[in-house]
Length: 413
View 1 (cartoon, one colour):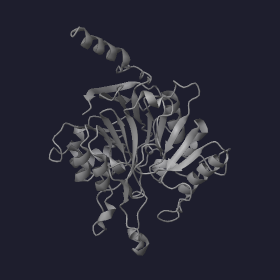
View 2 (spheres, helix red, strand yellow):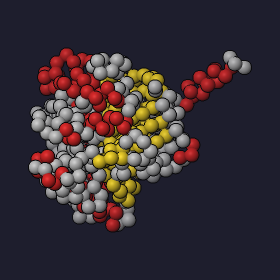
View 3 (cartoon, helix red, strand yellow):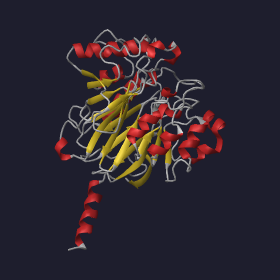
View 4 (cartoon, helix red, strand yellow):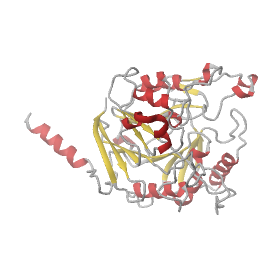
């Protein structure tokens, strides 16, 4: 009997796991798995998550608005025939094919910058659903309805000051119009809580799954219960205007846990303030204290030079770093050096980037040879229960969903 049981468990795990084969189409999500897709449109940030019960979460739907041949930005993927929002919606529809009527359960905007929400440009078409134009999230919603939007500002968008940006105003008009039409719910992220983003279909079957809100607008979870503290000064308006909290500093952050597996995403949160800036502009350090070790972390601010400080790296110490890059200054040379540093933590780790430009290689040099992945959509597929996971690279030059590489399995700690 003691010899038979391990064999049964091994056989069951083989049956459960969708077989990922290089050169073949990605096997569909199955109940019990947690799938985390970092979608590469070449135009901004976007990640689609499918929870173990099939609930979906879209983190950002960025479109910076640039086209082919921009020397400082990656080229659109798979091509220029569709906007980034439509590319994201089509990708999501393929991934959510297990639903008879695919939809996004949660839209989640880390902060109000165009490469995360969608840029308003001259070619942005008008929507038939309200007084706004289609860009980023509002484009996704045209093709695949978003049931609930969660951002840092709803409903007034006045912290730390009223937002006066055409792209942000377009996004706000989109959310307000869809809410008024009864087609969407909208909420402001509530740091510290674990009951705002939840399993919607079969929560009792996966008690080991949790989405913890970590931070937004400088309010940071303490790591104890649901308690938070305000990291930014209460009297910030008494400071010089240049020292008010910035949009990046106000970024939302979450930690997703599934058994022993943990995943972190924090938008464009900075951790290395400019010379002479007040120390509270380092938002990464208090966030890192709350988050703790994870298996997979998305590098803050695309690995830009103001992010991913030494304490953040050593506190999270992930097995896999994800770099969603689209610019000639992503990542910073020193940032990549910290991510790879065995002095900051001794464990094995790999870095997976969505889209590395030649100019990055010219500047950074041989260190980029250490990247495990430098091109493609990146899927982290977590086994039922969260004990192990794989990193799967998917072709981004077309919509074939063809697997180009499989790494792992990795064991969650």
